[in-house]
Image 1 (cartoon, rainbow, N blue to C red):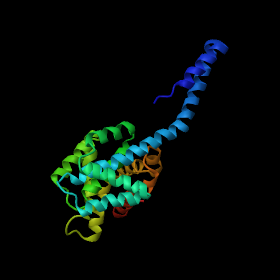
Image 2: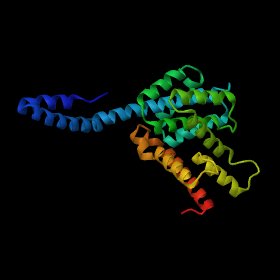
Image 3: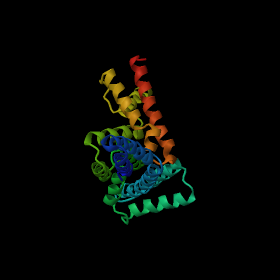
Image 4: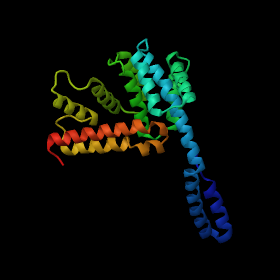
Length: 261
């Protein structure tokens, strides 16, 4: 909702008190009033709505993703439970999350509608959208094997949320590498380095500057405080912090391998 009441009243009363100059000053004062109001009660209310939408959409969509290949495995249920644990849900919230997951799994809650609601309330918050998609990819990878049907529904989700093919491919590759634990047969140190490059979404022949840019971009996207301010439930701070730590650790690994400071 756009805030304009302060600007309108400021301009009107300013004009009545001091003509055009007074109206201009009143408009400026009203603008700052609207900004303060938007960051206060109404700002908090919007964040609460975004949090509620994130919570419901995350588990409804997860149910759809886990059922995409025709069955929901114990590993996928475990992935949903880990997200609940990260969110430190109380008994009532956990029951709600399970109901949302089941509704998605059984097709009782429409996937497209859940995605529309999420995008409408999180419009413009690309970092929040990426975090949402990461949760879904991790759920699909929980059983260690990403089926074609799962890949397609994840791509459908990414498209519906406005992410590019490149962003989706990078996230899928990054999280897939982490789930696989590195290339087959690679020595421990080499496997760790491979995962580090995949985590940052860059190739091994990327320049030092490209690696640094990728690190900075990812750290900005996964900064916990920024995600919370955009509507990520505060209960998921732990997950956001873990992702930021993984990104930092990957960058440190690459720096050591390249002899950078």
